[in-house]
Length: 261
Length: 266
Image 1 (cartoon, rainbow over the protein chains, first blue to last red):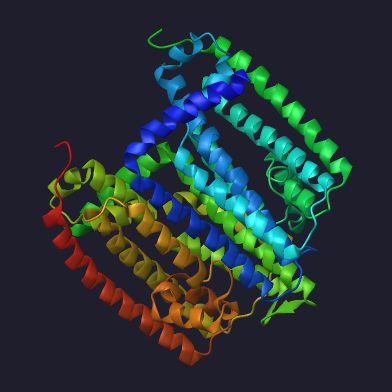
Image 2: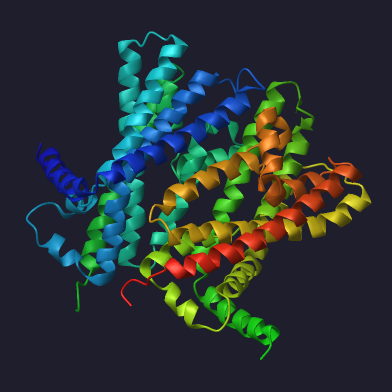
């Protein structure tokens, strides 16, 4: 609850900062819509030549695109801006202000900046998922919804932990923002089902850079092809990465020497 | 001091600075490797699902298409549209204006230097992809010979067009919308997402009328042996025409733009 209250505070701060620039909302909405149109346009072109792609039907791939936007939107909404700010503040020493606050420092840095207009990606992602599911005509059972929520939760934890691990490297190295950019561009591979990729790439996208768990696995849950082994595996990886991120954060902050020290 | 000395010195300077800041350049290279790889995988899956070939492309021909596409993208990419938004908005363009030489020269040298530095990585990636995906293509000799001028013209057209579009930052601060529109159009119309012959007819016409096909797709089609001599000559002529038109626009727009430019924080 404490976490949610903090998140709400930072969300409000972000909103107050941005509401002065309301035109940006429409611009961001336009950009998100064009992005989404591009992704769906690609799906349309591909499916004009085939009925299924690696066993996925068009609506199922569209649902995957929706999940891709949903998760990507969440990252761009809070994780990415916060982590970029973290790297910046490690470099110039302003992390001092965060560390002295009476609240868990990892939580504080993880939600310190919220770019509210990125909610457009989030909202469009949900809309696409809804339309895709309607057209599939699947009756969503309670188990499917639960599986989707669980897979999304696990995927969220995995991606978040991965970002924290990468950003924490800034305690040791000066220029890590570049690594973040690499992750962003590899995340693009998640627009398509990872089963399509050759085995070596699939393993890389599952464990090296955990894109598969963020997009493909939740989409599998929605389209009724998720096995419980997948789900257990997702949560095991989530727990492992979360612990690793926590550990790295502890060690890193101990190493951090502050501004002008 | 002639323009040759200027170029030589500029090369030395930018090359040194890029070697120092190589990390970010390599990151963009990874992106340029990954994008064609994704579409290669997707289209191979489509070809396999429909009995081995789609629209005249077999799995190994798709491999050839996207690997050549990757190399052509390496030769033709530019980042001026991102750079000028920043330069014009933050006023750092003023430094370039003080020099007695058109800034396009510096940008050209920067561009070529970054390509030379990342070329080894790109060739390595291409070699790996060739070994993994086993592409096949057999261009006639004349097409392979014409590929070189077509590639250089493609780069020239792309550079001139994007440099001109980058100048839109003189008039608007919403450049990211302009850029996004352009890049989405380029993704479909220059053949990066799929060979143009697989797109709906109207898009193919648009790709040929606009400069997009001539900036990337045309050299790829040529090297894959998918064009006859007549189509190849038409293509080279189209490239020449767009280059001439582009240079003319570049001159005009630049002159008008510099006049409305007021440096910030000067």
